[in-house]
Amino acid sequence: MNYAYGRVINDADSHTMETDDWIYEFLDSHELREKYGTLYKADKSGRVVGMIEKAKARAGDPEADAAAAEDPIAGDKGWMAFGAFDASERTRMLDKYGFTSQLVFTTACLAAMGKADSEEEKYAIVRAANKAQQAFCDGDKRLVNVAYIPLDNPAMAFAEAERAIGAGAGAVGVAPMPCGDMSPGHPDHAPFWKMLEDRKIPFMVHIGTGTKTQPKGYHNNGRERAPDLHGGGENLRFADFTSLCFAPQEFLTAMIYDGVFQRHPGLRGGVIESGAGWVPDFLRRLDYAHKSFKRTDPYVQELEMLPSEFIRRAVKFTPFPGEDVGEMIRDGGAELFMFSSDYPHPEGTKDPVGKFESTLEGVDEEIKDMFYRTNYDAMMNYHSSAALAA
Image (cartoon, rainbow, N blue to C red; front, side, top):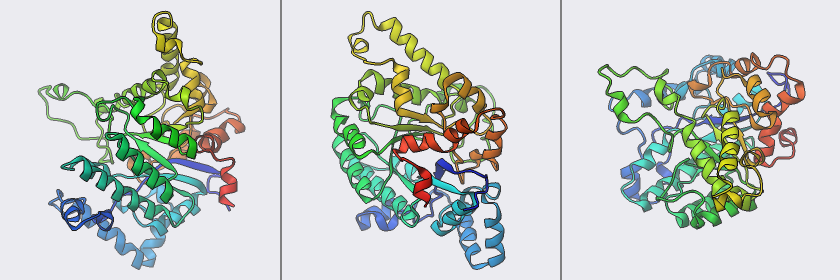
């Protein structure tokens, strides 16, 4: 294949921009379809549905189709993006750029889960969303469904994760927060983490559910609230953006302190779309805390490695385009960081590779290959992404 960027690239973050009826047919009953089967019911303006219909019409217009396929990453974002919800378009997008593997996260379904009236209904929506995402990915082996699994109910979470993995999911998304008033390292979740380790399925922590934002009181500053960054999928504002790193740090600290990484040495995971400039200092603080509390805390004493060593073995991170990846690598190590496009969300920018490359001047080609390809392979337990493309 003639790779557009001259190299094999794995993409650790992409999304679907779901249609209004995305999960409708996958819900278990007529009642659930009536309550939750329309994702954009609250959009009384019809703006979202209008964009979706306009994007669908492109398929019947060869000129518009060719224009959209020319350079999708630099083109429209959101629902109008090429391959936003059309799997055949996404395949052509992957062909264009030579992406060998691409994680696929939901965009709108998380909000639908949050509207459930009961735990049973929540997991029914989760199941429907995971089935819909799998249907999108099934046509191309390069598309990797990240099945979202809320940990609120350990038994239900295990059952849905087992079902989704059996159906083809290649990764499992979890929220970086206590769920059901329990730490992710609570013994009730032990079967879940063991299954992921045994099946060689990585967990993913992604911006969204569990993400910390400023307490609302800070918004009461006597001024009108500013617009968000650019109408992107997460609707971030300045002060929210600076807090993105806190939830993943708390989650990973729990995974270390509660012994999950120690009991499951084969467990792997990724922290996606939360930035990564904070990672080197986070590792230093973990080890400083270990040194400070090892004398008195029996759980810290039980750890067989430094906290930073657990992270280096188990977790990879995606920087934002525009962050200085070269400096991160020099400060924290080349094994920690990996590429992502965030396609088709606008946060990924119209030239993520170019933005990353601008900070990688003077970095050895082997190290660049770790960033663009092999760190992802290690997280996903692949021996070679190039072999997958063959």
